[in-house]
Length: 195
Image 1: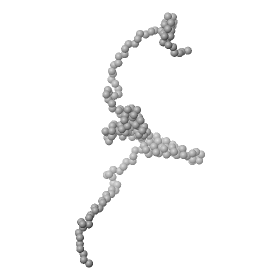
Image 2 (image 1 turned 60 degrees about the vertical axis):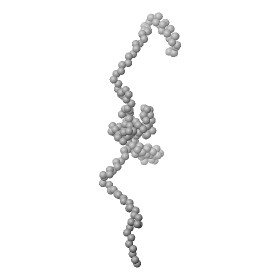
Image 3 (image 1 turned 90 degrees about the vertical axis):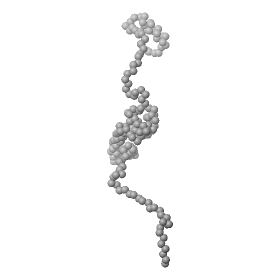
Image 4 (image 1 turned 45 degrees about the horizontal axis):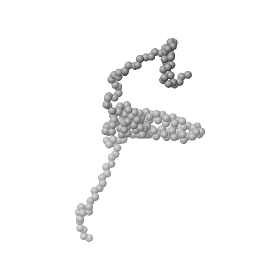
């Protein structure tokens, strides 16, 4: 049976065992030499570089867009990144200063992630709808199945990219409304008529 013993008892047993030669001899090694640390080419950030890596920007932006604003901000805070930067990453930008000019790699990653989530939700929605059969309607509570279908459709609606809007150059009719100018009665010519 093994247990914890004080160091003095342990040392006595080692000495006692060393005085009786056996097949299990204990060799006491000299103390280890000092270790020399050599700088080698590092992978990752350079010294003094405090830029957020692009992969982390993509992950935060994806989380922000798919799991919601609060989830994205919480993830960013775990890495010491501000909420405004998390919002910029969700837009595909690298910072709040470049908010209106997103980085194509980040933006396309977020769009592809949303498309994957929409595809998964669509599959689940179709499975839930297919599971609502006449037999299930007769014997099971359809509220559960319909709530799944409703939830999946809400996910799809929230994650699908917005429908493209028509450009001003399109052939749609355009209406221009002019408001009449107000004229004072003194501006009209006066004609005296005798009856």
